Length: 210
Image (cartoon, rainbow, N blue to C red; front, side, top):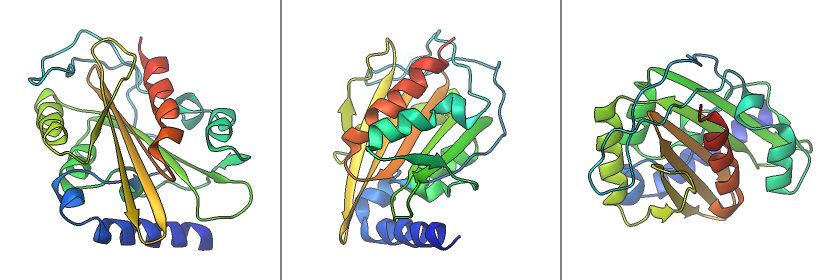
């Protein structure tokens, strides 16, 4: 509980220090294993063009944290032995910025999960997946595309759109990665460079495509 309290305080301080960029769009936050899921529900989503149009991609929201990302995958990406946390992550640890958090809160289905190193440190990895309405996805994508701090990432998934964001608050570098595919939005937050969690978020999205 002490370690997670420190992570929450760290996430809060990053949000305060992020300034205008973080208030314009989502900045990293942490979330944990929640179980409000509709694994079989699916719908349409945004494509990588400047104007978002529905996609026929079918995405199944995972029904467990292990289905979203295995402990072995997290450990391989982060370079240590990691374990699944016994509590949920905060939304701030996964998603930075009020608009993105609002979209996540209004998602019709979601799953949020948290992992940390076996040996106590400030480090964490938080992943979330959210089912969005077409209007929410279009609005959020428009904001991300118009914010220079969010860098486009090649998702390697037809019709998908991905972004990465990094923010240094004091001595810590926090990162956020988003992948939009079908009607679903996959998000990841962590300490350290975004490059370390990009494969985790992309893999979660690819494995959820039905």
